[in-house]
Image 1 (cartoon, rainbow, N blue to C red):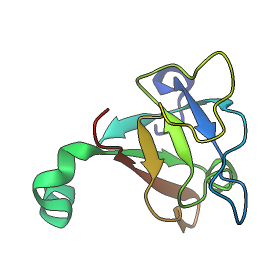
Image 2 (tube, rainbow, N blue to C red):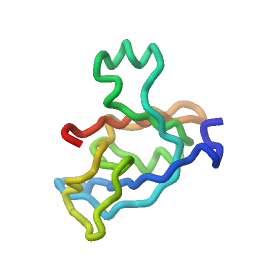
Image 3 (cartoon, rainbow, N blue to C red):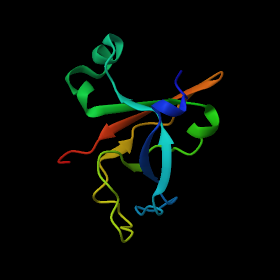
Image 4 (cartoon, rainbow, N blue to C red):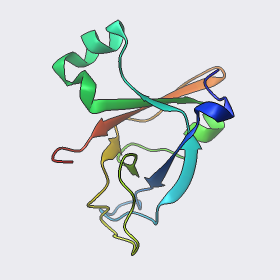
Length: 113
C-alpha cells in the first residue's frame, strides 16, 4: 500500500555536497509523503508533530536520502539553481530508518516557510 503509484506525489530533493554547505541541483521524485499524525508520533515529537512529514518507501528509494538534505514539497524550486537551497521548505531529519523491506524518512519543516 505504501508504494502504490496512485499515492505518489511530486517533490524535489537537493542532496548536500559532502564537507560543504552547498547542495546539488534538485532531483525530481515521486514518493508517498504524509504528515506525522499517529498517536505515537505525537507523543514522541510533542507539540511540534505538525512540523514533520514522513515517507515510507523501499530501502532502495531511501538510499537517495541523507541527514541534512533539503527538499521542496509544497514550494517549487527556483528556475535557476540556488546552491544553498534557501527556498526549500523541509530538511531530512536524521538518516532513513531501514527495516527488512521498508524504510521511513522523516522531514522537519524549516522555520519561516
